[in-house]
Image (tube, rainbow, N blue to C red):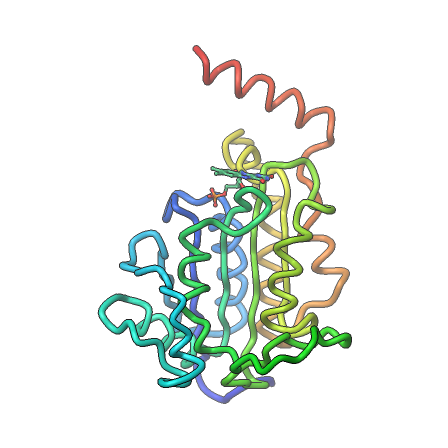
Length: 245
Ligand SMILES: Cc1cc2nc3c(=O)[nH]c(=O)nc-3n(C[C@H](O)[C@H](O)[C@H](O)COP(=O)(O)O)c2cc1C
């Protein structure tokens, strides 16, 4: 038994502009299915694309005059912040866009600067801790990042995403699941292959809910490419040819 007692609140922040058509969410939904197999959860999915989010103006009031509070109160960000604070488990689900997170999710992330401690001139910590430190640290909370991309593997291409989350949360303070070739896996309509792949996510979600953690073997298993490099090249060639017809 981990975390608070009672039904756990799970907040999914879907950062794909494709909203409910997101291929990353196919993986995330399988993970959630597993979580539900383990225990009853209180689930909420937010589509960032459907929110009203004003860009951060860079005024830094949230670190000064109104410390801990953003001065922009007339959009959906205060509601999202409240939900993040209340959640036991936060899952951020998004596609890799140009080696980073999609713009809409960056917009939301910038607006949540108030959730980090005020910067007072220190150097980057060498022990992998959060650079700023979280303003509302909570040992009972869990944070999972699930992201998919089109590349054939995730080595190196996720370096900047990983560095960003390491600096924000602290290296060991979140779980990351970065998965290659996902859109093709979903598009190819090979039900058996897709179901086999999703089964790993269902099992991981169940295991996570039971233990409150995921070991490196599980995480590495989730990040394995569904297709061989050769087969994937053929799929992509065919896909782009079809697109031009
Ligand atoms: C603007 C844009 C940029 C992208 N950049 C990358 C990239 O740098 N690397 C990559 O592997 N895939 C990239 N992709 C592909 C998506 O990450 C991939 O198709 C993903 O699985 C889509 O997930 P979604 O359906 O959840 O949005 C990009 C797609 C778009 C539209």
